[in-house]
Each structure stands twice: as C-alpha cells, then as structure tokens.
Image 1 (cartoon, helix red, strand yellow):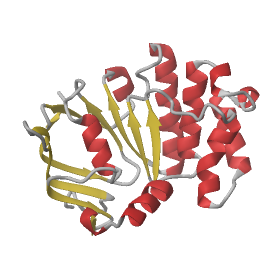
Image 2 (image 1 turned 180 degrees about the horizontal axis):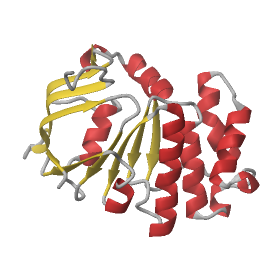
Image 3 (image 1 turned 45 degrees about the vertical axis):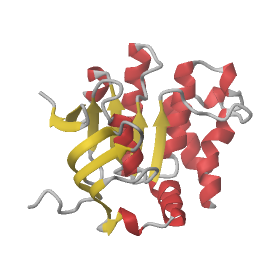
Image 4 (image 1 turned 60 degrees about the vertical axis):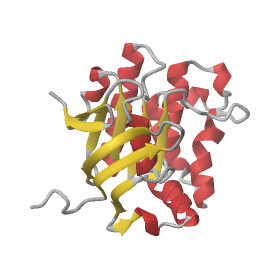
Length: 226
C-alpha cells in the first residue's frame, strides 16, 4: 500500500520562504503524509520551522512551493471561507500558553467551539471533564486555577467537538514534567477514543513518547528521529 493511501493530509516537496530584504527559508522540501488517527511528534529547536509547518497544516499560511492536499483537495483551492470552515470543523488547537479567554469561565471556554458549530453535547463535555479531573473548577475563571488545570480545560476545549486532527504547539512547554506528562496522556486517551489524529510540536522527548511516529526538523528540513 502506498504511504499516501488513506491520507488525510499530504505534503509534497513543500517549502516556505518569508520575503524581505534578506529572505528567510523556514521549510525546505518537506514530504509528509498524515493519516486518520495517527500520532506524530515533531521535535526540534526554536526557529527550526516546526510552528511554520503547523500553520501550513491549519491553512493559516500558504506554502511558497510544493503541493499540500487535504482529502485530495489542493490547498490553493480553499477560499478563505473554506479554510475557516476547515479549522472550525476539522481541527482542534492546543497551545503552550493555554489561550483560554480570561473573561469566560472554564465551562464557557470549553463550550465555545461547540457553540460555533451550532451544537451542544453537554453530556460529552462533562464526561471529558470528569476524566480530566476539572469538574469542580468549571465555574472558575482561568486566573483562578492552576496552569495544569487551564491546560486540561484547553485539551477538552480542543477535543470536545471531535475534530479529525489536533495541532498541539508545545502543549507541555509551560508546565512541570509530571503535569506535562499527565496532559499528553489525557490528549492521547481522548484522541484514541475519537480516532483523532495528533500532530504535536515539542522539545520534550518524554511528551513525544506517546506518539507512534517521531520526526525532527533541523533548519527547515524534516528528518527521521533517531
């Protein structure tokens, strides 16, 4: 079977160059296939191109060269509205600094993606919150709970709509080791349940260990992890 069979997202010879007085090459000749339900860790130093790659997968940015396809549809064929629908419906995002809205409670933050999609699965939301151990904190605001509790809420917010793909950008980077490992374990368990694919950018080999495939980015090039 060809690697591209059953692919959700395929990148072929992708490059990204930021123009300027001195152009900056962020990615060079990237080949990558992401299949439904798989776990992929991208390891690399700051500035290596990891976050640029996430932005391309989310259609937030466009490649300078090569071909990016989503469900066999070329990225250049997506209008801005198409890209917004794709992000809203198919993607979940988890960030290093949690990115919870400070004026909303944890409950309101978690429910926001479902409201944007026009459906509300309160039962599933509460079930996931029980698994995450944050039911007692749902009516508190982000500043009133710990960083670990904020990130648990962010994980539930990303996954409660059952997206096809989670893009996690250093999800443990602002947490101590034990809390970070609990967070990636929670992500992994819920992704398993929904057959959600995970692409996680991380510096942490401990966090990357939950992923079945690990690659590294060095100077914009994608290499096997050894």
